[in-house]
Length: 508
Image (tube, rainbow, N blue to C red; front, side):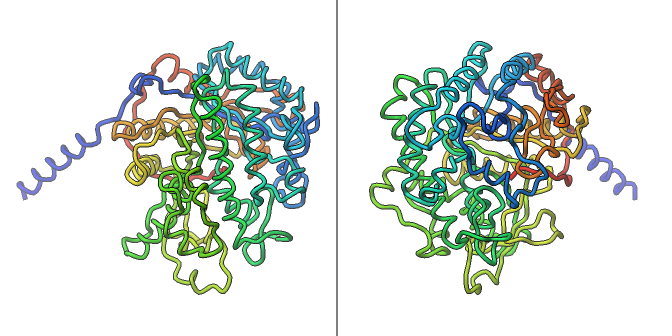
């Protein structure tokens, strides 16, 4: 009995030593690592029909019956009129970097051709304010706001004509802003928009076909997700080639693409669930990264989709290979994946059925064939994703371009968000120490925005925006001051370790 007690005491001592707090400051990150936060044009700017801006597919969607929110984004956070005070707030809080997107329909309202002088002036003003305050600029060229005129003319991203129009639009951005912008992201989340925009139709332009989507009136869920993905890859790669040939030597910038990120755990340790999880990773990450490294889609995707997935010509394969300087990740949560034995038996399949997996937000939760946003707070999941990408695709440069937590109310004392950020920032550092080549981290979002799921009721911002007031007053939350203290004063962060806990958020 005495020996058993001594053994138990010794085990408890070892366990307590193993749970030593993880602590770090901003100085523990590599030189040049940039901490910041982000917004996006449609969700931030407002001014939907001011100064020559044309409607985008998101404007059309937000004014349609398909919009799940009570209100549209016409005013949003009114950043079009309040950008100067917002840049000052960015500076005062000590953010080193700011990620925003440029509205295609504001800068080039007809989709091609003439530049809107008022739109050009607006983005020049924003960029100049950021330069004046010493903020590192990360500009996104496209975030779900295709000019509606191109959607109407030829189907937008479903047509190969988008490649030339997007390249010309990117050329305008590089030419007009590239002397001050050194970090370019071409397209945000094309890997998940293939599902959301063209399979289940829950985001703009809201295309889908029965029985796969919600209230489908137009679309083809079996084919269109792959057309979108293919044309996105070609448009991105064409813009990268243009930048490298025409601008990169003089402007000394970098250009990449952004991916929606999820950590997916096999539901069981069965071979079937492990293989299903790998297929799901191939579709989510490999659909973009495999062509970049090998000039073609993963074999699992080609086998599942057959003739419904476009083939790369020799020219296209050469165009996409190596067409990135970095990858941006929007990472929020983790889910479980298991094999879907019935998917192959479906007479008609969409992209989700091709994945051949079932997803759960909790181990015993309901299943879905679609990728789920996740409810787990699982910082270790980010470490797993970064390790997976490094082992599968090499030590590519990565920016965490979105990571954050929403809340249902406008509470300024957002202690839970602070805990969330502490843990995910810690996991980013752990991944770097494990060999991941992560260059920066941005909180989503800098301030409350118009969210595609949740509208004005999903509060992700470090800074609160009072959406009940037409003047859209701002007020920093506790998390903004915590983040500021971490960046400006090298405050020591202490973590005792933790376990995944359930939560919910409204990001796609």
